[in-house]
Image (cartoon, rainbow, N blue to C red; front, side, top):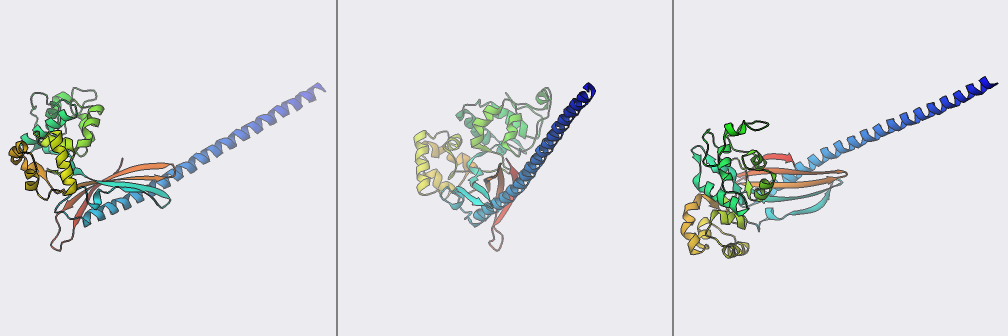
Length: 313
């Protein structure tokens, strides 16, 4: 009798264990299935977001292709931010910016070494954002092709190979401003201060005085005071500068006298533009950035626009 009761007890325990095991197994399978479905949804959403980003890049290219390349300013169609709007069950927003409104760090070094005028302007820009002007020496050495150290604060392979982990100086143009974080003296904080005012373009470029910020303008023309810059900004908002000469004539006498020395550093038109897009689709929110170069029109007057990059950010 006691043996039968014991057997029934064991059977009940075994049955409970089997049910518990089956329940946990089923829950585990359902959890994995749910996880797999979510992964599939995210991958599908990302693919759709990529397609929308390419469409946004095509939209930006169309706007820039229709723009008059003779002069570029903030009153043109490309400068108007695209408000969020629904697209294919997603929300898309974007904006186009003139990359030549910024200082091109790749101007600092050419085949002949450091470009002195651009170096001086960059040193002033560093000081304007609260960074040591001596950081410019390291940037020159990172860009130039030689192994000579720019005094007093430059750095070449000997410095970088002693770091942990070691690496070498690029000795070439950089493709992204973020690369400056690898240059002697720079860190995330320094880069955050400088980044709004600099760019890294694949060719030597001038600063567009119709779109440049007050900080960049003052770096190019140290004789400009805050009131002078305010007048320039107000003047160009009413009527953009049509030529470099017109801009120089609008400067105060103390700055106009030295403006001829920076003739190659300023312009009223731009070749390089950046298009940013943000796509929100379900749980996926992704940012994209495209860089465009506007080349000269062909013999038929057809605008030529080249998309140099399209990357997720």
